[in-house]
Image 1 (cartoon, one colour):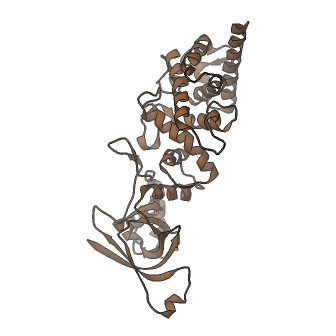
Image 2 (cartoon, helix red, strand yellow):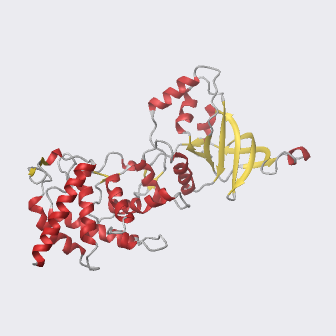
Image 3 (cartoon, rainbow, N blue to C red):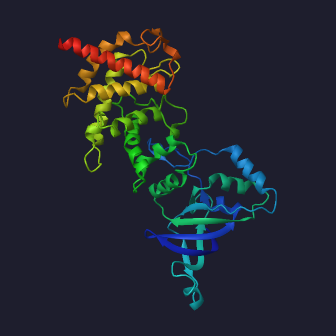
Length: 367
């Protein structure tokens, strides 16, 4: 076991110890790990960091290799609970600032079992480990927590305003427990449903959804599903909105069952178009999913508690002769099947066509 002793400033935020200090940039990866996002052996989401951006790391290292450079960007670390802090004694320290105190922070670590996780600054840490200027003192802000959910919360909040992949944020949101800004909170329910749809065997989307943690596996991009679910939750006329209580809480189980009923009907009515890559089936493409999501809101707001699948399948069967998901031409739209793209114009065109056909069928049945 090795201990790194560093002069630091200590304070508290939300009952958690927070430290600021400087350390040699090349030593950061000695004590801190990069928790890459992925899935563990049980299929649960693990880690949170996106993959290394090699070109970005190299550009930072090239800058640092210039020699006497200014590099004041602080990294954020999550320290394990084994750290110790010894405050300096004396009146001079007490009088400095009542919000904080100076002292020595002792960080124990050993190879294979490090004492911290990088929450923000992984590209900088990698670059600092490669540069000739590894001895450059860099600022660090560290908080003490061994809870991975807290690490993810801070990772999301730090990167929210930066060009971080929205899909990565969405996938992490269900595993975050703290209060979040309103725009992130509204994205948590669709992302939770998306994970359930991909991971649960009775779901028509089981194993079909592309998520950042799964690499390239799957055929349906998760953002297409989360977008249509978010719209359905936020629109008072949406099929999922009926399961949102006045206090903002959501009945996730009821939402999940509705999604399973409707999309199982879609799968069963269009079996030859289901599960294919978007280039082979516009049903699994962004344009098809978005349009069918609009149709879902049209149909599933008027079903009985246990009749969703039967109603959806009956209606979709009536629409099937007019659909061209894998071949042919949409005569009403004047477009070949593979000419449709995930643009507002095409989504609106297919949505209006399907909703119009559904209403016409309903009028004929009522006559």
